[in-house]
Image (tube, rainbow, N blue to C red; front, top):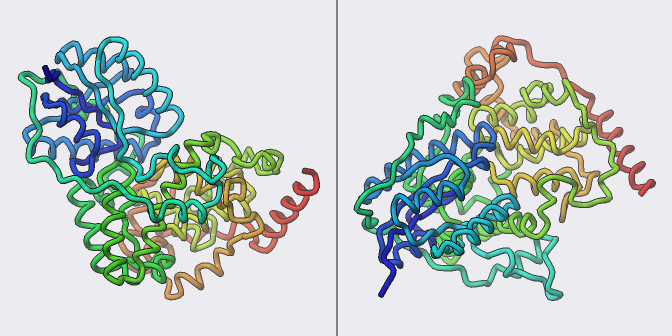
Amino acid sequence: MADTRPVIWWIRRDLRLRDNPALTAALETGGPIIPLYIHDPQDEALGAAPKFRLGLGLERFAKTLEGHGSRLTLRKGDALAVLREVIKESGAGHVIWSRLYDPEAIKRDTEIKEQLKAADITVKSTGGRLMFEPWTVETKDGGMYKVYTPFWKAVRDREVEGLIDAPAHLPKPDAWPATDELADYNMSAAMRRGAEIVAGYCRVGEDAALEQLDRFLEERVATYKPDRDFPGRAATSELSENLAWGEISPHRMWHLGAQAMRDGKQGAEHFLKEVVWREFAYHLMYHSPHILTRNWREEWDGFPWQDDPGEALLRWQQGQTGYDFVDAAMRELYVTGKMHNRARMIVASFLTKHLMIHWKFGMQWFEDCLVDWDPASNAMGWQWVAGSGPDAAPFFRIFNPDGQLDKFDPKGRYVRNWLAEGQSDPPQTATDFFAATPMSWELSPKDTRARPIIDLKRGRERALEAYHDSRDKS
């Protein structure tokens, strides 16, 4: 006879009903489904903005489930212990989840799978977060890809799993397990004054993500390639936060983007390349997890980055370096929890090269501030700019923030959006920064603009000298 005991659908970074293989597998068991979120130590350790954004996503997803005749069960604690408790309470015979690929999650999930199988529980993990599982993409020699372009060529013609409609309803158990209240997890606590401000710039939930994808493909994708580097233009998909929390699948972005390309929309292929860039980041993290914690290239271990940066790091974090492009970007990050991709390269280059501060400090600040934080993309991005990562930009490629501003914000739209000082009537985006920042920073829109923290020419020369010295010693 078929095993129709309840199935626990363990919710992690997959806050959607469409294109969700784990949900499909749960439905195929034929039993009632218990959607379960576990606030375990790994989620408790998230940075302030990611944890806050996860809380918003869970709140919205709980309402989505209610609209489909279900509910979200919330528990806090060690994941294995919680699963055992809910299995005992509900009589569940199955546990199903979507895979995560960072080393801590892999270690946790492997142990859970072994322990539950030993207890005669059917356990299944599925894909869904990626289009191409990292172990399925290999070079001709059977190794990992270390350069993006060959990776792109290897996967661009691969078949991507098709799209899956949302179920009309989810079968529910006769009795629900006990649940916590999401508010009790206090997931916005570390945001201090910023929670309400950042929330106003978030796009939360599956429906909002789908609407945004349609809008992007209809209105923006045709000019995506030439416009995407201009931070003052509404040119990108703006789906990073939804992708980070699984409110939209990369599969849907791929299939709809591919259709746009077939329809002759010029920027569509470049958009697909960006979707695959994220896949490449996960490929690197899975095969070389040390990218999350140390230099990917060992020869960079002796590079003389500052490990005790002091006030210079704080001024960078506060958007007080005295360089408009850097400061506007850092304030955009603090207010919205996101940052334009061109701006991310500028601020990372300035920190690691002009200021000679170790990339790990920048990566950690982003981990605390990004609502679209993604471990693989964040680590790869920082090491790419710093020069220490795979397929990295050469260290001697040092972005001049003033030159970049002239090129990519020639009319000053981006700067005016985020720098209030000197404007008689600054926009809300610019004043929101001062409403969100800690009182201890003692910042005001009436302040005089900060003076440059370093001379650009001197900073560039110092960085290049350090680079050539370290090459000579290696």
